[in-house]
Amino acid sequence: MKECTAGKKRKKSAPNTEYLKGHYDYIRVNVPKGEREKIKAYAESQGMSVNKLLLTALEEYKEKHNGEKQ
Image (cartoon, rainbow, N blue to C red; front, side, top):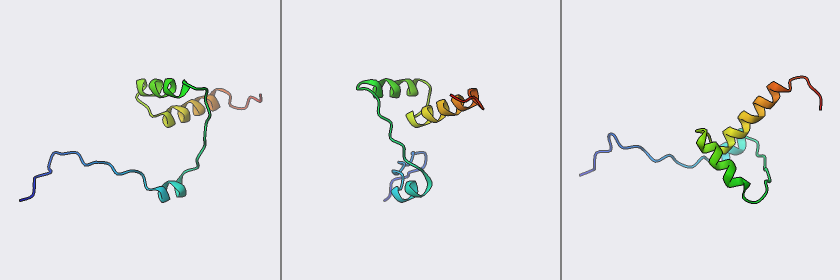
């Protein structure tokens, strides 16, 4: 007899590598030792992933500096 799975959350599968390659670009960011965990903790405190935090910060930077040349 199979166990009823109603009401149980299904485990999310890992993103498909081929899908990621086809739909996303990859950017590597180097930070000083120890900063990675601080950034991760801050992102989590804001309810975001590190990726979402960085994308949000870049978008806000672009909006703030729209048309300004450095």
